Image (cartoon, rainbow, N blue to C red; front, side):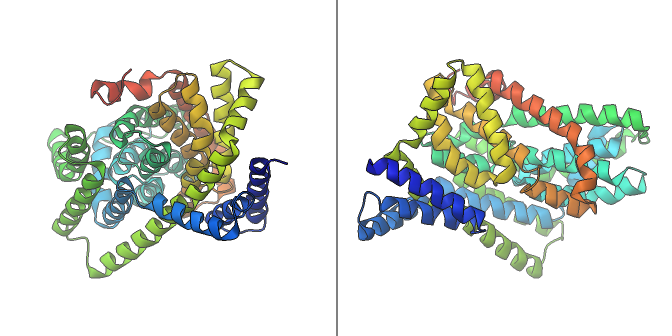
Length: 436
């Protein structure tokens, strides 16, 4: 049997068995891929090549943005920024039906745009606004469902660590283009959820809040402006070319620290906790990226992406049908796997196929990220689902019924983004980051 076929079989079987017996996914991928190398390399060369691939995978300047953005997000989560964004969102929600739930949606989008973390948004915003909703008579399951369903917008609206990981795996895909491409799909996701919240609120009779007078609203927004300026400074600086995404991430850390100190909401004890949490998250992500480079090498040798692409193209030549099948696969993968490893594994498989029938890698990056964002709010692995339920004080079983309509609207948003390229490609083309 051909060595490439043997290597592919060894890798797939090894990874599946190790995952089935509970071995951590990073270890499963790294060890399974290293074992597969032995089908076509000696033991010494396989180990040396594995080490080289791990080092080259982590030795990337764009990846330095990840620890900085994680640190900035943790600082914001502990630095008194969330409450100011919630107050600003309450003014923006105005007299909409279920104003506190609408506030949750807007605040999640704003906080996600600052921190780049869906789980952080679910914890910070849900923990702040949840008690207010309970006091106002909202069903805790409905409140938790709104918080869970809209927290992933932070993984689309920049800055986004997930998009940085995709940029690294996809090769020469601009981080700036991906960042700008995420705005409209993220806003579309949030807008669809707000429409659904309004429909449910009218059925359940959740009342509108008292009108906020102009001066109070203006004051609230002015207080939130220093926090919101972070988006303008970081994303604006990247677009204009003043600094790179990596340099922008460091600026985000400095700015958020200064802001938290000015708000007097951070101290030495919190900083210690923030640094430890950031180090833990960063190590997990970078180790995952490192071991995935071993797997990418084996996949290239065994031609697995070409085999999958030929299988799908043999089933149908219709690009719309292929995109639908791809979305279904990615949605199922997202239910069982966190976004980072899923992007590392499936980008090399699906991206060449999408490029083959004319899709821009930037659009595919948004599509795969959006699919995996939906996975973060579905069991059994959904990190945002678990975070939101814990913060909301409800069980996954009880919240799931309220969450089902939100699954429907997020999938509709996904279909729009998949089949209407302009949703993800128009803004990057306006800034001359892509040709569209």
